[in-house]
Image (cartoon, rainbow, N blue to C red):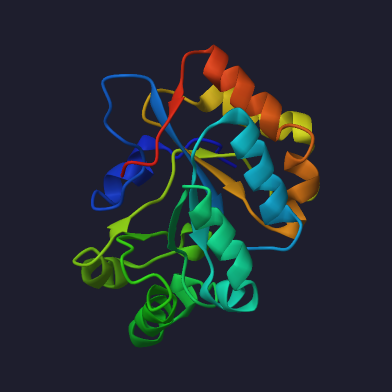
Length: 203
Ligand SMILES: [Zn+2]
């Protein structure tokens, strides 16, 4: 299990964005899935209190269920991005169906230029089509907040120990991860600020 994405994997997929080039200590905080009742409003309240912006990779069918939550994310000045319509695994889905699913989500956010593959699983064939239209964003710091046998403290350490200038950090905006981020999200943000990091949503 890797918290940081190994360099050899990054090198195998050079057209994917694993981390950002930056001269200063900028980092990119991202939340996958959702929007989700209770969880999304809580995340928004923490980000507002800490005065930082994040990028939310949203699932189309969740946007349709909870449009007011998607609206609240936008209203708070965060960036929303495409995480497919029904969270399909690219390795198990043929190209046509996969692209269709992404376009169904894109129809809900026509100005968006960012896509993150669910589970980080995408084939070279899918990449070759999608890279023409989207920046395909992966990550270099996976917090493992979705693991049920982890603890908030481990999630916190995963982030703090592995974040460097240019890092793209993944957390989740869903019920399963809530118990692991609820006790630590504000602390993690405060610690990263203390270390001089600045949160960016410019992709
Ligand atoms: Zn996801």
